[in-house]
Length: 205
Ligand code: HEC
Ligand code: HEC
Ligand code: HEC
Ligand code: HEC
Ligand code: HEC
Image (cartoon, rainbow, N blue to C red):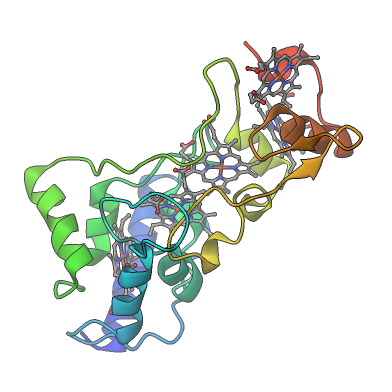
């Protein structure tokens, strides 16, 4: 596939998804697309790095790289995590969303061959969830997106990461008590700084 065809394919897929979801958001504007029928060296490298055992984070069932998709190709976070602005959960994209692009290219990549096996079996990919709060806590993505808290503020530089992990973000609250990401102090500290609610029932059922 020529670079122009590839670009057109990505834009079409993005438009189809935005119509399906009733959303309008920034279309991916892939720069530096050099993929032909054979996948680019960058894609091959990204899939290796996504499965790099030395990097922190769980090994996912498919070697999917955020640095490539969200970074290099600038595919909008909401294109795949379309729940974030509408509901409490962000959600992960369906296999169908992936196949919107990958029936067209990438067949020579190991990661796409694994992806196709899930597609053929009509099974969801068992992604391992990295960020998770306990049952007694309620977190709402949509409220944070509405308040314009960037994804990266809580999840780290996702667009630069081939393999995702819980990035460290230890803050000292209150007065020299360390509080790690996803712990209560981490939430409450930011709520205090932003005049957001600190009422127990805001976060607890
Ligand atoms: C909007 C289009 C688009 C969507 C949607 C998409 N991809 Fe890709 N994907 C690409 C492009 C472009 C490449 C790079 C191709 C190249 O450079 O040769 C790629 C490369 C890859 C690779 C190899 C490099 C890497 O990232 O490890 C894998 C594996 C992959 N995609 C998996 C997925 C999975 C899984 C999904 C769904 C969660 C998905 N893709 C959704 C466009 C897309
Ligand atoms: C092409 C689809 C695609 C795009 C674009 C994308 N993601 Fe993802 N995202 C995924 C998939 C698939 C997973 C599950 C696999 C993994 O963890 O890498 C995931 C997982 C995540 C997770 C980890 C969730 C957990 O398990 O706790 C975070 C955080 C995340 N994405 C944030 C982002 C942000 C921020 C952006 C934009 C900068 C973004 N994503 C863009 C497909 C995508
Ligand atoms: C204020 C901090 C914060 C912001 C901003 C934020 N997240 Fe999250 N994210 C979390 C927390 C906390 C969890 C764990 C939620 C749970 O277990 O209920 C999470 C979980 C996730 C997950 C795991 C799956 C799921 O459905 O919960 C994904 C994917 C994700 N976030 C993507 C994003 C994306 C994309 C954005 C930006 C549009 C974003 N997040 C913005 C804190 C945040
Ligand atoms: C980086 C800053 C930041 C972090 C970290 C953060 N929040 Fe928030 N949160 C906000 C802001 C800003 C708002 C919006 C307040 C508003 O709408 O007026 C908000 C709103 C909320 C709301 C909706 C409040 C309402 O009035 O309904 C809930 C629930 C919530 N956060 C839970 C959490 C939980 C649970 C965590 C930790 C897992 C967390 N937040 C971490 C900044 C943050
Ligand atoms: C901004 C969100 C937020 C607010 C406000 C909040 N909490 Fe929490 N709380 C959390 C999160 C997230 C956890 C789970 C992570 C942890 O254990 O640190 C938690 C955990 C807890 C736990 C369990 C600790 C444990 O060891 O399992 C208790 C008890 C608790 N909170 C009580 C309260 C009380 C009482 C208030 C009001 C004074 C309150 N929380 C206000 C977010 C919040």
